[in-house]
Length: 188
Image (cartoon, rainbow, N blue to C red; front, side, top):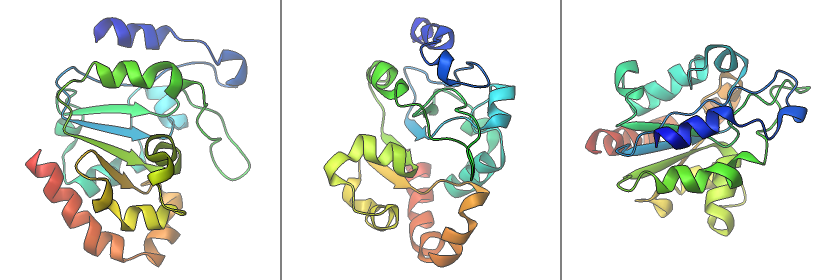
């Protein structure tokens, strides 16, 4: 795994498409129990090099009911984005993750974690890539039907503060889904 992570850290495949340069952000360990597949690092994470080191990460840890120390223990959580580098700023937020990363690296990373218990899919990009035709027509419907994808996958919305409106509209998520998510996480 160390060799693979070093290869990823040296990757510059998308350099010409990354206005802020490359800085692949990923953590994993052969004994990781839970793999979290998110979108791509934001500008803060790009600077710190620490995955989920922002407001989205704070909310995600609350959703999972885990503290920072547990979350950043690679033997417990592998943190693998769809795009390993910050894609840059768009008109209404960050640009989508680069499409090259997942096909280049995900299979290798996931294969190096033989005893994974759960893969948490954060947001539409991860859900589309991994669930393919099994994904429902909307993120909301996919998340509502999360039990359909267990025990392998657990789809969640992105914990970004930009999703506060979605969370307000879909209060069932915090009432019905999060208790289950926390129970599953605790058991693993």
